[in-house]
Image 1 (tube, rainbow, N blue to C red):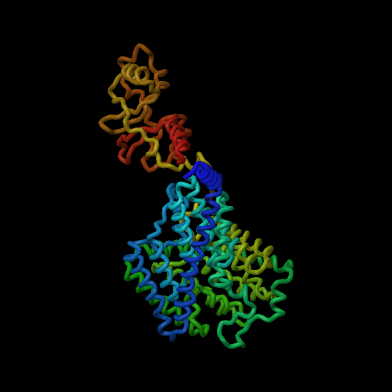
Image 2 (image 1 turned 90 degrees about the horizontal axis):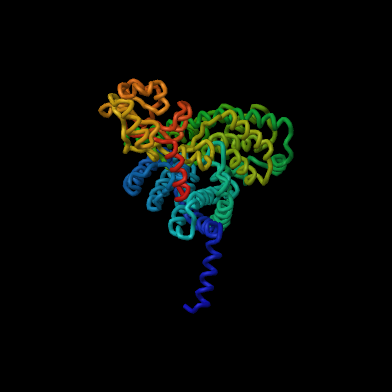
Length: 581
């Protein structure tokens, strides 16, 4: 290449690798790839498989969820190399790891397991596999172009990929961004990934709607003439109802939002506990008994719901259940029953090892709760209370109130945002720290705080010269204090830790008695001793409480392992900072 050409290439390389340019470009590439993957996933799951199952005779619909759970388990075991059924939880787990990792080779198995779980009638949502797919693609893009990126960009592309997955499957780009930023924390957001997530979500959304279309994930928020069936008598919205839905909101509606917030907070807390229980069962019960029990219960729920609602509303993510519940002629008893049936179907599907998300199941529970509350209060605002219930229940369950309100705003064109904010805020207070998502941290940690979460073994010194209890004080002074410049030394007898002796302890003994006074007479057995399972934060707290700068580390039988020095913790922080963690 001629010199001019080399200069040109180097100039373009400098521009391309300047600042955030690479990560922003790769975020858009991630959004594009995710859109194509999720388009195929949704088409296969919802448009083809679930639509076909819904046309089957009732007895076939009853056994379909169990067969789906069986197929999902076999796919994860053999094709997925014993992968877990977790999806969005895997994104959150990877986000908080020092070296995030989601192998791309596991993605086909997870998506296929999601297809058979949801497509065969499992009561979970498509967003779980979509988030997992987006996060996996984001990490894979980062690995492919790692030479162009900084070390810290790994979590940025991980988050951008998750945002692209949510934006595509819900046709709601802003919701995707906010959910991906909120999901890793209960009381905080990942601000650094905002701009890349915006670009990834926008690219994914535009690509996706051109591939699939713009049908809303929550039907009644998008189509005023949504039908549960083909009969025009089943139409539940009129033009006047639609105008009323999107008109101003009064004081009574604010009170209703407050009531819904309390109910959704309690419901979200209860569902979080049930979800944690279900996840525990899916890991502790053997495969065949778990799938058989789940299949039987889901079959009975499908039969029961068909008898009560003339449709098996227990199957699938729940769009049909939402469409049914917002009809104005439903009784309170049937609405409450549907709430219980849908909740049971979701928990059973999850406990049996089904692969899917909880975003839409939470939204379904919120819509049902909102409609129930609206009818009790005699509300004459079609769609308002189900929408408020959706925002409040979803925000409480996932600890993502901003994403929940944004979902309402994007789905309704900005209507109901103010009461939705009230409902979501109240539900957060009532729900407390509970969440359906595993691995969520409370808040983002600063630089030093992150270092303090490291295990104590990262700064442990095991090559330590100890002093036996029968050594004299003179030996301690000349060998350790003067010879090795040590102010505090562990006292160990045959591998058994007894305590510490320090230079400050010598003030209690007259200088003339040093040759006669054994160390055992000065040992401090009241000082704390660390355990190998401690974090650096635990060690610092113990040092501050005892006013010392060194701790002995022992096992459960008081066997001596080593020591940890305050200076070594500070030195470790400097080393990690220089090497990028």
